[in-house]
Image (cartoon, rainbow, N blue to C red; front, side, top):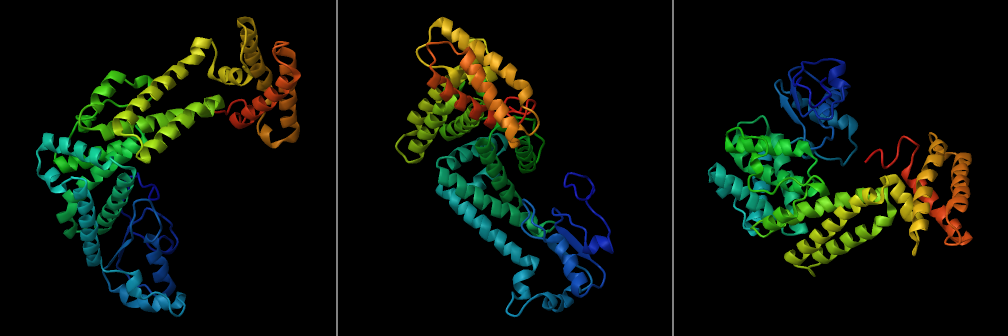
Length: 420
């Protein structure tokens, strides 16, 4: 239970093996109240020096003066010319200075983006939410601005956490909370809508910042509706939001939705690579400054509509996504309606014939791989309509279909369609 950071067990009194050998990476605070020396002291201190996400350092509270023995203990393990004890163990008061420097650097950077942390803190609830939205929009103006702020915010937040529990830390709480809300808001927009952990963290920090409970979703009062997938996009509402005063938020949200959707669509059907290339070209042009925000957003909207239509194509063709992927590989232009139907039927029947061939770990077994490839080859030579498909066509399509099956199917139960 103690190893689980989500478990309510937060404090334990320990001795013996729990002091010297119990490994809990998320453990950050150790209280010492018994004499310890040499390797026992070193192993005890090591309980809080494990690397863990969001953990800047370990905190050791010495009630008995154990640190007097630390220099001797370090000498047992250290070679000549190694770090001085002051480089390894620092008094907690030094962290106050580090936190002040981190916050000063963060506030200075935000001021360059026309964001005033103090104004956000002083504002009433409604104005505070509006200012947070405007600040987020400003941070998202440039890719480098976003990355730089995320780095600065991480240092400030982790340094503050390192000070807890501490009375001195309270003086910096509101500033750190404000920076944290902005950082997590940027992260949510950058990483996508599915990260409920980030959303919950924003909600908790905002509650602390507002000093009152807020309803789920209330913090996005000045934001557009969630974009979970292409089918959820209200293009008129998105356009209207963009034309307001938060263009960067609209761009960031749509851009990251499209990146996720295109990646998933290409995994299912490699012939959709053209959409990935189109998106990457747009991002490159925008990041290099050759497209302004309005032009970039307009082209993202066009791409989103094209992707939305592509997602509906399997239904229009009367096929599953799996069958459509095979059909797109096999299709060649021009095809008569009769030949097109034959290729569709071949796509469906080929998958049925391959189903039992895709045994567990088939990709690792030479005989199984050969069986799959021969099955594809025989089926295509038999089923693809002549003379539309020549022998050379069938050989080429065999290789393409085999590579698709190899890349997409671990076995008949585990594939990119089942995991989507």
